[in-house]
Length: 115
Length: 115
Image 1: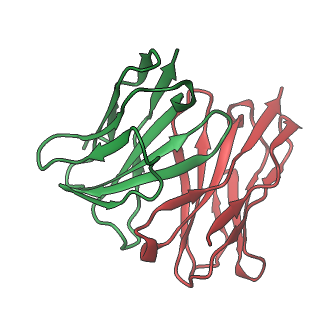
Image 2 (image 1 turned 135 degrees about the vertical axis):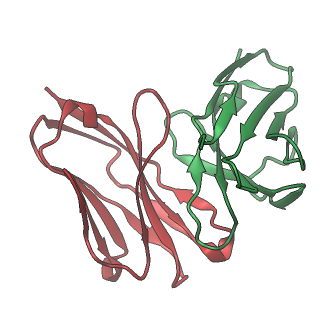
């Protein structure tokens, strides 16, 4: 049973470009969480999604960031018009259900560098 | 509001010494989960332990042990006979099934084990 997969592992973008980060949850998991880790910081919650639904996006910046988790395929975190401050590690975690005390399994992260 | 505080930003010890990493949390909920994660220099998150709020038994796993004390809202982590491979950033974290299991992370403690 493969773990949570994220790709790409490293992503370099110039200011103003778009970044797309992908997260494939563990098999059988229909809930995905995205977290951001700024340099020298802990992880911070961004968004929680269920298949085809955004449940909680209270941690997402109001502009330029969006997330989706379609019926088929991976969850996507999209950052438009990236700025240097978006440079961070982005982790996703998956769970079979949400709000039931289930463990979240983390992917290896995508390290975004904005030049 | 929920909060996790790791007061020790950085610790250095000589190999084979014991070291304790402190964690203090805040929550008004009675049901919650506490975690410790390790982040080695390679950057991935390594799950170490998950403990629910109703289980105050201390846990030991090899050289690792955890002391959960609800009375002081603390969940401290001790490494016995430290090794150079234990060098990493360690995160304490808290989640609440009533809040969709979102994980709140502390800022981490960077541990250096000196040979």
